[in-house]
Length: 192
Ligand SMILES: [Zn+2]
Ligand SMILES: [Zn+2]
Ligand SMILES: [Zn+2]
Ligand SMILES: [Zn+2]
Image 1 (tube, rainbow, N blue to C red):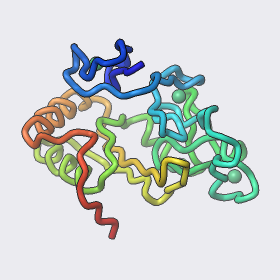
Image 2 (image 1 turned 30 degrees about the vertical axis):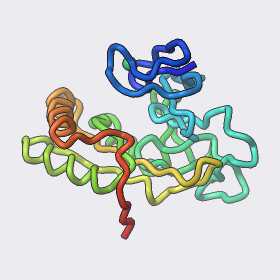
Image 3 (image 1 turned 135 degrees about the vertical axis):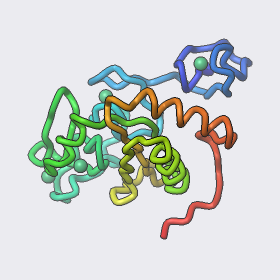
């Protein structure tokens, strides 16, 4: 059944657009992380919210720990996306972090305001947030690209201080409607 990738409501076959969000529906069934119950995209290897490896990923496609190529990863750092094994991971509030303490510290003060797959979009958003006086930090997971049957995946998270999240979301929403950008925006990616 088609469902809305934004609000996760399921619709009858044949319907093309979410009545509430006015965006195109996606085929399939929405999936939720067994650990944190947040919605996960079907091509996500790790939950965006808590970093736990998703159980649908077949054993031979599971990424290895970046420090221990002979061990499979149990999840990916929610800040940098680095795949880690049990020993290399730190758990905090049900989320997975790599061994870099800075990532845990950052997480406690910063929240993800927006996720994109292009460096270009991330840079543009960061510039606009900074223009609005918001201290934005970009975390690029391109350093930790792993492969699945969907191809290579990489996310870029734009993080802002928790106290400025609402303000940041307003800036991003305004920017998106202005630029007519969306998740499905394609364009030449220039990974220099
Ligand atoms: Zn919707
Ligand atoms: Zn989760
Ligand atoms: Zn990390
Ligand atoms: Zn390890």
